[in-house]
Image 1 (tube, rainbow, N blue to C red):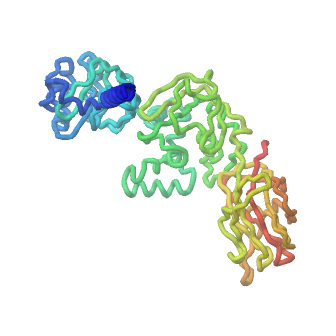
Image 2 (image 1 turned 90 degrees about the vertical axis):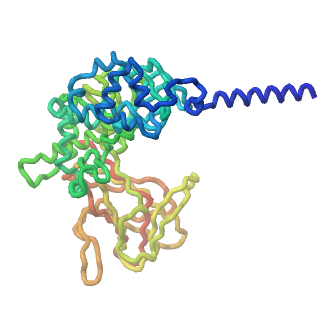
Image 3 (image 1 turned 30 degrees about the vertical axis):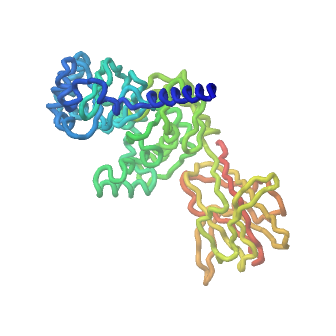
Length: 489
């Protein structure tokens, strides 16, 4: 019984300690004896002698009235010494000044003692700052923390929180001395894809930033919205020589015919397909950079830290100024894979088409498409491919015939051409036969090299046709996937 009571007392002590440890400083403020608990934040800051200059800016910008309201705030207040370092370009510009002050204020009360030691908080400026541990906000140090008032808390810091540019703002600030920056900015006027143009028109009609400011620029729309303050990114910004070298490597594979002689479409697209692999949806600090990063387009990008000329910390991530980023063409020219079950259409009846879930002899699950015993000859499955290079492609497929019946599976692959109506029958005409009529053997699960084709002009392939045998209406089709593997010139 004595032993049992000991355990009870020990358990009670642990629970009491846990309750104390988990207490919230904001909830406990009533008992901390702070003289400012009866006044609002604007008054508390103005009564603090070492923050008088920032208090004057609160009045000047109208934020004193906001901090006098019943909502709960946190304010990071620079000392007078820190305010003496703020430039006249901010202090004498009403709009810049208001943004500057807003960058020190956030909603809700953030104590220096928090459950999450590294917290990303949104300021009134719409910028996000990292509250690091109990001593740092962004790159400023808390010299005196947790001054509570009736409607929040303020911390005194040794450095003003001048709003940083975000990555996209920085890129646009460099257009006069960076060829890469100038090109990225130019994609506001030039549309990489037809859908980009429609999005830009919509954005202008509905007003700037409609739906997303990513609509206004082809890079922001198709790669990452580097103007978004809510996410963190890394951008590798190459110096001009390294940038030019990378673009020139891509030009033979991005040959584009332009309708206007003054526009070098090949150069424009070579730049885009070089730069789309230079942005990543995470902020990588220098000591976090791996040897290789994979872009959202599947390109493996080697990261050579010896080529970093400068690192620039910005409000939504980091920019590395690079002497060069040398991506081998074997990595840059990615394979196009087309899943059989993701056909865009068909010529024939829907009835014989089977979208299947299968398991191969090794037990691996896969999906494919099978057309079994169609009621017409030359039954056709339709596909397309985006962003193809101007080069030769080797064609591979995995086409599984696992039917034990006597059904014949015989098919060929056509690239390009058009769908034509002859009498009452639709067919694909004028295509390049990349794969001749081939019988699919029974129970072969291998990926097989079946043909090749050459694309002289970079861009999309709008029509890819898997066509059944023409001699018999009972010839079926089957496809797990197609692979188009680019060949280096």
